[in-house]
Each structure stands twice: as C-alpha cells, then as structure tokens.
Length: 418
Image 1 (tube, rainbow, N blue to C red):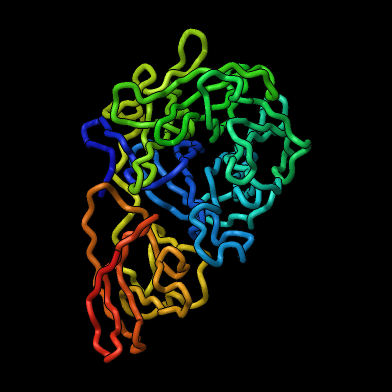
Image 2 (image 1 turned 90 degrees about the vertical axis):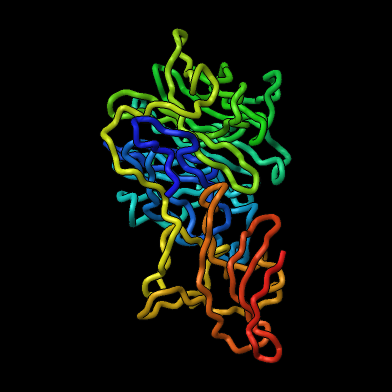
C-alpha cells in the first residue's frame, strides 16, 4: 500500500503516488472528495474519498460510458475527460469537464456513490477545456470559466467566462475573455482554472508555463468578468517538484486551508501533492513553504484516520474486477463475463489492430501504482485458435508485454514483446 501517511502525524508527498491527473477536490461535512482526468478510459471520472486529505480510497466513478458513444468505441488517449471540476451545491454533487473535441459536459447526483445523471452537453465546441462552475451565494448568480486547447481551437493562454443557469444546464451568454495571459509578462499556457469566491473577491487559481516546467498562479477581481490581478503562488524553487501544477483549494471544517495539485512524472503520470495554504497580509494565498512545495509536513489538524490508498491488488471474485480497473475505451458486450469461481475471464476479440495494444479497446487497465512496483499475475490461455493471446502489459506511448500465445501447431508459448 502506497500512502503518504508516515504514521507519526506527518505526511510525505506525493499523497497519491499514481496518475490522478488534474485533481480537483471538494469538502462536504467531514468528507473530502476528489476527481481527476480519465481521458478516453471507461468508466471515467474517478471518485476518491478521504477524511484527512492524506489517506484516500477509490469509491467509484461518475461516468459509466463516454459520450458520444461512437467516438469512444476505440481508444482516445488524447480525448475524453480533461481536467474535471467537482462542486457541491443545492444538495447535489456536480462535475463539469471539457472534452476538447466535443465541448463542456456536466453530470450531477445527490449521492456521490451512485445515481449520477447521464452526461449533459453544456457548451458545444472544439478546444473547450478545464471548465469550473461557481454558484455565488451572495448574489444567487452562477458562473463558469474555462480554458482553451490550441490543438483544437488555435487558441490558448486565455480564460473565458460565462454566466450560467443556476441549474447548470446551459450558459446565458456568448462568453467573454476574463484573462488574456498574452498580456502578462512571462506567462504562457494559462489553463486549468478553478473558480472561487472569498473575502469579497472572485478568485481563479490556475497554472501556467506548461505541465513539466510551470507554476501555479492566483488571480483575483472584484467583478467576475475582470479585470484580474495576478500573482505566482507556487513554483519549483530549489525543490525536486517540477512544475507544481493545477489543482484545487479546500478548507477543513476547522478553518485550515489546503491545496492539492499534481506533478508531472513522465511515463509514471501526474502524481498528487498536498500543500498547506495560508493568506498573507495583502489577502493573497501562500502555498507550501513560502511558495515552494513541501515534501514532508504535519498532517492536517483532523481526526486520525486509518492508513489507506486506492486498491491495486485484485482476486477477481466471480469474474468481477475492482474499481481500480478501466477499459481502454467504452466496453463491449461480454468482454469479461461473470462466473461462479475466482479469477478474471477475458474474451479474445477479433480485430485488425491486434498487433498494437494502443489501438485495442478490449484492454483492461489500471494506473501504475508507483515508480517502483512488483506485479504478479496467473495466466491461462483457453482459446485454441492460432494467434490467440493474453497477457500483461505496461502500456503508454510505447509499451511492452509478456503473455501467452497459441502457435500454429497448437502449442502455447510464453512470449514477450516491445
């Protein structure tokens, strides 16, 4: 079990040592809930739960299948769910996300663990990413801010704001640029905005500078549509935490402020760090240790919790797989049939791309659990057709796999390929 909890009242970053990319967090009562990008995998929109911001468990997903369904019949590693925002309003949980090829989507539920609505398209368009809603309790108005993906729209480094219907179903205007970072010296690739109301200000916490080398910014304005003043509030400094980037602010029941963000670790994904957060004399947030990430720090002042981390092991009872598993695309009928015993039964699926696992939807995946891990699996190949294969892969832009393959003479061989 990989947890950041050291068991002595302190924690070590990352608190989630796996690819929980673009995290956002909300508190409801004594409970904290986190969601993250899931791109083209299904189910999507993972839901994690904690009571101390350090020990987390995976409790489910808010998106059973991606829509439009036909677009995700095959893997889309560069599409799907980008940088969701999770909020709690009017006794409902709300998650908004941007699909760079289709637009801004929303789901909601009164119960975080079940009953999520079907995806609803709030704004159609190309390159619309990283949306975040805000329900202003002072005025009763609702707003939404989002960023842009240059790869689809030709636009980036700016944030667009909208008024929104209070029921989250539609936007009420064509949108206005609230922050154009081309006008901020040294800022580029402004994205991932998270919108808040605090101390009479509208706050946008948003990263810039790129995921591997960037920083976390804060912007504030008395009016939602601006103008905004900006400040860098978290950057690498002399720490090994490159590009501290994109996350969410949460306040505990006892008034402590914390910020969860990611660090890009290349093939290992975007791991999640927890930073303390204070406010300076001018009312600006100060993250980490004076604006640099902390590696070791006292835990939040919250009741002690059991050490926990999202599951990685699985015995597959009755053919059922745990919440940590996702298909590489929307699943097909009968890919993993249930049965009365233990173990997972995966059906061999015919296709033209069996030579390239990156193109196959019938691949069951989970996040790499850490930089160092040992994986064990027992395999049995029951298909008698020559060329049938089953195995275990480390899958990314490149991949390697080891497994069993039925030869033309009917024998089963152990093979490995890169």
